[in-house]
Length: 257
Image (cartoon, rainbow, N blue to C red; front, side, top):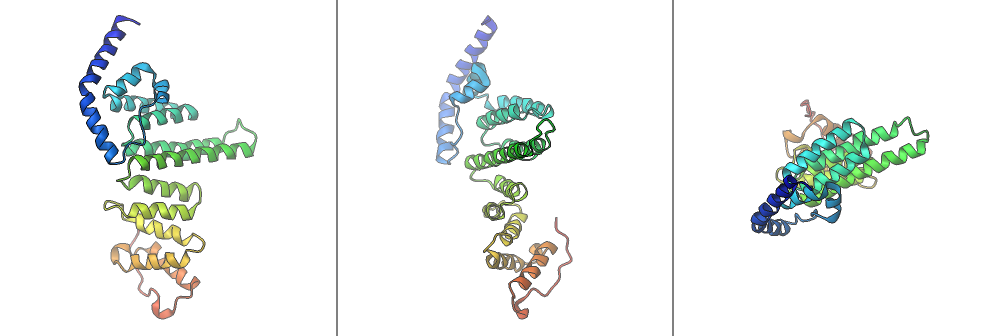
C-alpha cells in the first residue's frame, strides 16, 4: 500500500471518528422511524472493498452510491444484467432512503432485464428463457418490497409495486392492495385510488366490493368522474344486475390524465 493510500485511509478514519456521534444520533432516529432494514454488512464490504467500506462508514455513503449508480448504468448499457443487479444491491444498501434508486433498480430488473432474458437468442430453450424472465421480474418486485420497508412513510414505491404486479405478474388482487395502500397517504397521486378499484374489479370474488368502491369514488365529484371509471361502472352494473334506478346515468366527457 502506497503512502497516499495510507494517508487517505487515515483521513477517512479520522473523519469517521469525528462524525460518529452525529451518525449514532441519526441511526437512533432512523430506528425510531423504522428505517433500519438495510445496514452496512460484511457482504457489502466484500462488494465495495475495504476502501469503499471505510468511506461508507465515514459518512460518504451518498457520493459512493452515486458513483456505483453510474457504474450500474454502464453495466446496463453493456447488458451485464447480473453485474448490474449486484451494483443495485450495493447502491440501495448505501442509500436506502432514496426512492429513485429502489424504483430504477426494480424497473431495470423487471422490465429491461426480463425482456432481454426472454429474447435471449443464445438460449435455445424457451422454458429456460421464461424462467430467467420470471426470476428478473421477481427480483424487481423484491427491490420494491425492500424499498417500501425502508420508506414506510411514502406512497411512490407502493404505486410502482402495483404497476409491476399488474403489468408484469398479472396479479390483479395483489396489485389492488398495493394501489390501495398507496392511496392512503396524504400525498398519494390522485390516480392511485382509481387504479386500486380497477384492479379490484379484476380480482375474482371482489366484483361487488369493487363496484361499491368505484361508485364511492364517482360520488366524490368531477375529479374522479373520468371516462375509464364511468365505463367500468356501467359494465359492472350490467354484470351485477344493478337496478336501473340505482345506476350511473350521467356521462362524463372529460379525459383521463
